[in-house]
Image 1 (cartoon, one colour):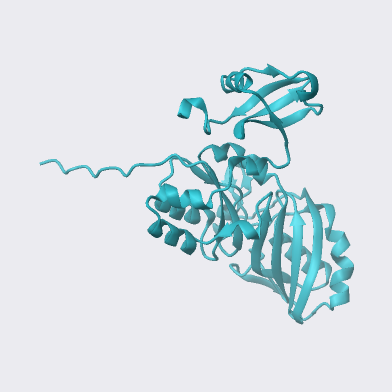
Image 2: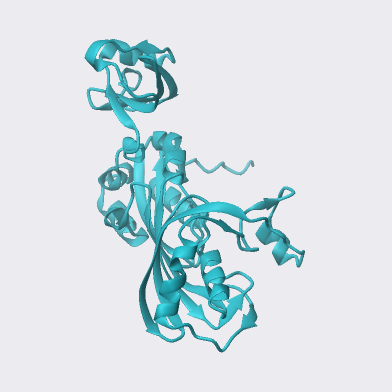
Length: 317
């Protein structure tokens, strides 16, 4: 007899953003897998990887929100991190092997004095244990195999770098607001070298990604409890979801009528006349009666759709 095939569990249409407070010890993909098992969504992804040793803000995009992921990933990020002086590791955090030591411990004034050098547009060499590709291979895979990894410096934007406290001579706690591609571990490493000592990150928490902050975060335990108490996984998810357009806060909103909505959903451009015409060029997001319709390029009074959303549209009715 043929083995009876196990019936596949149904997957659900879920649209919106959920901001997970990722715990230490889980990779971002591990956390995503747990959410898949909780909610069984048809489509889901995360906006910006967070190291297993780090905790905090991991924005999760469900359904149509996955179309807005780049707008979150390109946004500013805020981290709070603790640096331990006196040791440098090959991973620039606690996961690696110690490769350098120093007896020098910087004073608080000395630390504050160098912070402007690490603020603004600066060059940074990423950690050898990073996801950057070299000849098609991840740097961390090459490093684990013992290969010599040489990464080129690249420009990053550090908008703010503050010393929060120095609990003891060995430790300093910082908070930074930075742009895409910044490695906090490399900041710790480079500050240690600049101060004539060694340093590595011993604690890292992401507080903000784009429009999503601490007040929006929810834990896996809270989500699990919500699923147990709700009638369906979808109902539990809807309690925590933020609208898809939350990711588009940096864009101007343009409202259109039902006829223009229909044209945009078909991929056709529309002309805006009179006082409704957008005066700014570039990208805008379009709504109709509170529904997100599309991300468009505005040029000379015309809106051309780049991304069309099917949320609450006639086709779903």
